[in-house]
Length: 467
Ligand code: NAD
Ligand code: UGA
Image (cartoon, rainbow, N blue to C red; front, side, top):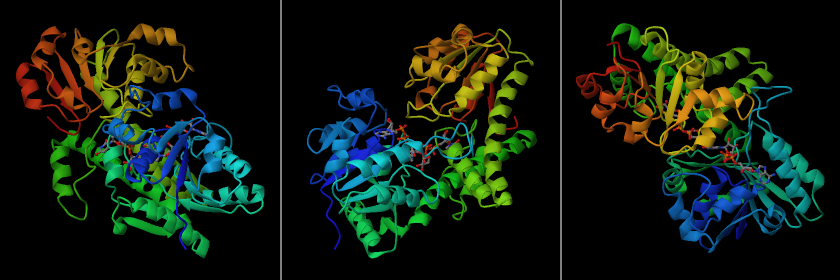
């Protein structure tokens, strides 16, 4: 018979663990949900009386307000949380390995392993253990081996894969009404029972036909595949943008026409300065590593090209800025609008803004930056590569500004990197008045009203347009 889940613990209170389990708590008032983390300041922020939560996500505050202290708790008592729970989400970080075998490609599973060992150590009753983190294929097998080798007598562990498909900026919408929820399990009776238990939790708000149940390895691979195919779509449209610029075609028109084919579909075809975020590059490279380790070199090359195309796009855009500004930006002032990797998030992981600004700094430009959600301290961490580079020259060359207007004052060029809505309707006339002439705008997201800007007198350079 399916097990009834009454207490859930989530290990890892990050971008995924926090929002996903807060939504579980909101939608399942009969389940007690505790989100635990080793990071005290993160937990303190989740418990902040004024709801200054550690991550910015539209709608998140209302979800947390709706259930914190009722059936949603944030705590650093990891062991206690594990001991009490019937179901454990493992939602810890899985960065790319920096050294050793597979460095730069393979996932670092150290945090997953530590969390798994902790579960084995402190559990005195049977648990369903759910991989929520994105992990390489067959990680569930390693988790099972560790759990079984260290289990106390009478404790059994059933392992499920339940990858998360939310996108940042729309996390709450995505969690309220996901395209699908994917649960992978062993096809044994125990595996299927555990799967049914988790499916019943989601069934509290998600229609049954959207809850897909598959084998463990399919589930793990589907997550990498979904990310790699989305990344591939953006790289495809970005590689077309280069052809558009050289031919006079317009990439937005091309993407619209292509996307009208119902087999292709209209979404996720926006040409850009390149994709960013903690996951597209990382999981495309994980897939490359997987293919290589299976001796599928041609397959590895195919997925590697998606990442290479993205690097090319970022470089191409940076080079275009320099070329257009008469082949030199030394001493010139470049205003960068947006630092987050996409709009509606404060997350800067792998943001194209970092590469672009580094490029501008290597050409000895002065850079001003404005982003509505990213703090100056975060920008400096990213530009110094978390302290790996000396801070002083960067602090000298880069100024973080409190508004777009401030950042653009006296600039030679404006570069739009993040598609924040507020950039569309800035007071462009006043901005133009303060700038050095000719005043250039590089629209890395194709969001601005080109004609209006041209009428004001701006020289506008967009992605994927020949004129
Ligand atoms: P994150 O770094 O924001 O959060 C992970 C948290 O886990 C950190 O706060 C860390 O302190 C905590 N942690 C690590 N080890 C721990 C331990 N042993 N005990 C307790 N806490 C521990 O990461 P994230 O963005 O939430 O990503 C989590 C996973 O979900 C990753 O595998 C990621 O690839 C995947 N994912 C992320 C997104 C996204 O949009 N960010 C979307 C889908 C999937
Ligand atoms: C992505 C996926 O969309 C999620 O389904 C997945 O769960 C998540 O990765 C993950 O595994 O972490 P996310 O990275 O949050 O979500 O954001 P996206 O909306 O996918 O955007 C990624 C990058 O691609 C951003 O830099 C965005 O600006 C860029 N992008 C997106 C484009 O350049 N063009 C587009 O048409 C769409």
